[in-house]
Image 1 (tube, protein in one colour):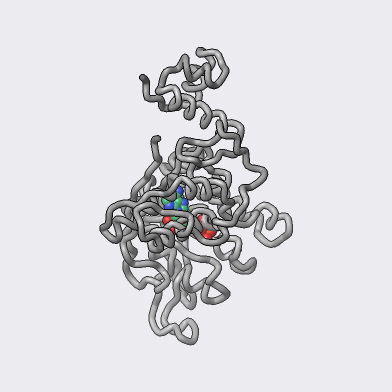
Image 2 (cartoon, helix red, strand yellow):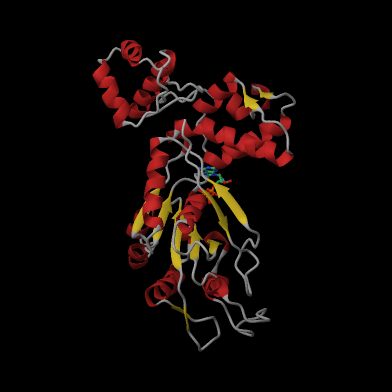
Length: 348
Ligand SMILES: Nc1ncnc2c1ncn2[C@@H]1O[C@H](COP(=O)(O)OP(=O)(O)OP(=O)(O)O)[C@@H](O)[C@H]1O
């Protein structure tokens, strides 16, 4: 199975950098093969080469920051920095000074000049995580900077031009916040030129086992040990679990399982109670024909069909006539579906 992987390195920013910015070089790898995830990657690739602002929406832990890094990596700004800003940690004066900088003596505790995130990201990208948390009174200041392309550090009379791209993320419904008067409409339109919606992991069933294997491989690399495998029961359990914490929860779960497991095969006893005891989601389609080779369940009708075709092709050793018989369809229809959904088949 083809796994979509994007690798990148994010350089560290220099100068008088606020302490909350990670200064180490980070690397990342995006893994996923579900149609929904590929759709996200396609959009991200398209907007990567453009300069427009992007809003990435999705539940917590779905990979919004990773997608932001991918967009940055694919842009002409890739050689410059991506500066992540967690808007939940910024309030009032601190917000303004951290984003736009301050001069020495601007307020109590301002012992030296500070560039702020925007100027530190010059030539690169500012990633505003949880942008919906920016207090209303500060949203107008952000809008001004975005519209005019200049920042005025707190306590300074001088303004500085900035050349940054802004990518935002939120798990909230920003449109509704605008309607409720909690988010400025003008800022919403300024930021929301393109939106990318990351589906929750429960809607990306084909990604679960791939991601689990990826996180296990990361652990074995970390400890320089031989790889561990998932038992068939674990594959079934993680495929039918709902993953309320999304990819982050899966990553933690696999790290825990890797560490706790004393054998090469990871068994049910290494999974946390909530997964071991979970009942498969009743809404999930669990017909055997809709279970991939690796045991992962599918949710949409389209995914079920693709899985069934893949399963039949394996069962028939790649003989399409036999696969068509198993699926009870005409051979030419099977061919059409294989082409339409770009299903990779090992021909016998
Ligand atoms: N497609 C993916 N491939 C590999 N790892 C992923 C993928 N998506 C997410 N992760 C991992 O899952 C974790 C959560 O991802 P990330 O921080 O990007 O999510 P988020 O949506 O920004 O979360 P939050 O809303 O809490 O800020 C990270 O450890 C990230 O490396």
